[in-house]
Length: 154
Length: 433
Image 1 (cartoon, rainbow over the protein chains, first blue to last red):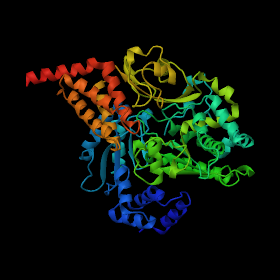
Image 2 (cartoon, chains in turn yellow, brown):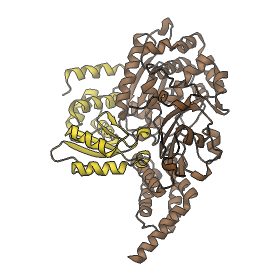
Image 3 (cartoon, rainbow over the protein chains, first blue to last red):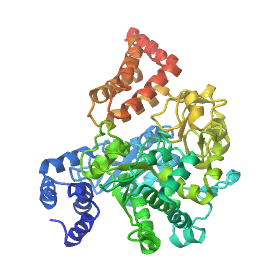
């Protein structure tokens, strides 16, 4: 199920840890990067690849918020609404995005183009308000900047 | 991208050492040109116990929140062990209001790497894991590049600089769990388990990763090590506050004109940091409240900041703590109930669910605070909140329970009138309805 290149990556990773259980998180990251999310089949595959019980994989997947159990929209927008961002207007930013995309935080658009989430502090308090799409941080947001960004991704 | 500290003109009084002016330091050649990895060379000529002694005398205290003396922590590691020893560098940085370690990863990653290798040598560690929060993938890639370059120059790996000493440095990526910044939870996360904190004792130095002796230090703490070795403990312990010396990365966010991370000696007055370093409050408004060290620290009243300094002792005397040195400033128009409710929501979300007082209590506090927000609160709700907070504090395996209780306790203690106002509004609303 993993691509040949990714299988090689897993073999490289084995050298880093004394147990194969420790590879669960790194391998789940590889799966998510390849597939976009972590399906039950993927979890079974990882369990047999690492020779650990399936329940161990399920336990890890269900614990960490960044591991996606369902396919998300093409663009997954996460808006930080924690205190530092809140004090600098993150609520308005979130409401504006909800209006623009026609979905609420926690939802995916019917065309699978957008997923919108409310997020906890992502370590960008000095550049608040902010949002994240994938690995990319968009900081010091204004309504205009958000509009520009959505138009570009449309 | 962040602004580079060199962009701020008025801060030249302190010559920055954690994040110096050179914008190319992330490149290994620039780092070497500035004397980089000389501290490692010097360290390898010293005995491991001499390094631990040097760190002890420097009075360096951990920068991850607990302010524990670093040298003392290192000395807990057994000298002779038939098991491998491990170092975990904590870059989980998830405390709301904290964004300092990210600056090191971006601007001076080799300082961190050099510090980690010296720490490994001092404690006889053969593998170091740098645990970085999953959201920081961009910075993980930057750090990985720096680690690869350090391997290529043989500063990491087998027989470092031709000596008998060998160590490996790996990055372990988190996946979005605040609790994994707690040291025992971080170790469980590396081991491939759910990030549940462990009961202590045993402490990590006795039984940590895979039951082996382990030390966990924050990214900023480790980044101080090369500076201590290069310049000596006498130089270090004279910087800033007596009992909590050294340079410190202070983050300022919220209602200020120039939010950001500032490197300064410890012990600077809070008001100077807010008004001179961070440019004061927009619209010249007054300050209602300040959180001094990330959302887990006790909230302070804006009209009682005079004389409080940014160091462990001064903030302890003021009834709070230095935490991660992430200052959040709230101006006079801030709805404090809204802020506390948001903080309570955070701890409710992030409680790992292992201990009942925290799992249930954080949810109750959040629900009750929402009643205040919606003007549906009764007068006995204020003491009910306090009662729940008091019953969480000290009754959980890890400090997340305390961290959830303290903001609520301190908000009621310092701003009881705001809670009473909500109760009064609730009463009026009931009559009108």
